[in-house]
Image (cartoon, rainbow, N blue to C red):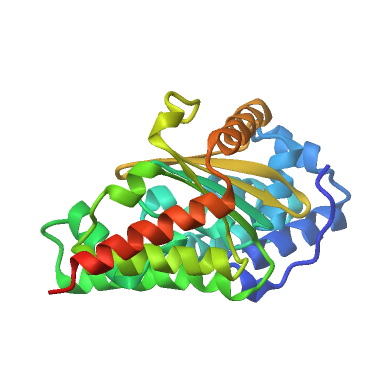
Length: 279
């Protein structure tokens, strides 16, 4: 059973629903396992809903209203909580990210979204959506920068990112954009807000060659792993799947350059881009 945790409803759009679900369940004397049984989900999944790390779907909401006799409360509010400024494939992961206590991410192609500068993010979104209006692109950039607000906390969540060396050399925008973007990442590492490593080309084959992977840990809820591809994403809580990718991440870290070596490399490449942009 997931450990009980008091949540701040203003910290996450699902926190209020999670708190109400926990209170309604306990008031009825129903266990997490029993509540999830008819939905063919685990007690851990119910705990994740209560902790605000998973989104409540409408079919679940109707079931909770019936079993817990809540008069349609969850169905009504589930629809409002489902609205998100993020793309459908990423919305649940972004909301889980906001309440994570630790985030570990392997980035094979691009600087992770949390650490992107506005200029870098703008070029990325334009590449993904070449026919989108300027307003659409700016809305996407604004949502990405809003996600990065969690960096303001000096200690939580713990952030550890492994960048493939390709990230440093894939030119996103012009040289000035790359110089600023890489220096921003380096500044986060220098301020001890981010554990940063670079996986060099010479490391060869590795267990995460399939694409980007984000591992998230939570207080009082099981960990999650998020897989992302162009326009797609999947959030998994299956323990063997999470454990497999945790091991893969540990192996990546063992084969990557040390944080100090990685920082020196990133700043050197950023300086090269900065000099390239000078007359």
